[in-house]
Length: 67
Image (cartoon, rainbow, N blue to C red; front, side):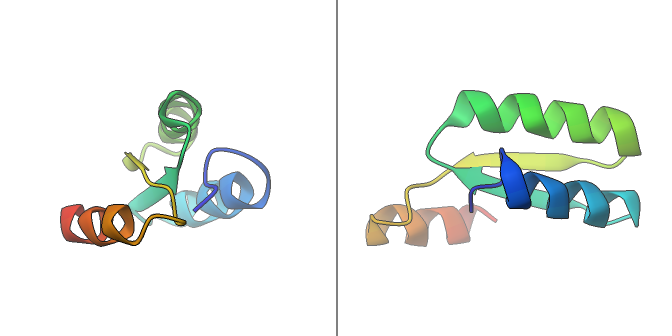
């Protein structure tokens, strides 16, 4: 979670550069989509963006099912 900025973004960028197909999640879908597009364009690998608030157990469950 928190994949749109900071450590989450840095880890996703690194893993994607190694060839991983990544999923990032956060409450702010606009930030996530921009980050996913930026990382994908840098690495050539797909980054999926999913909105999720980890304080909401039902939303976490739905996000895991969507993965």
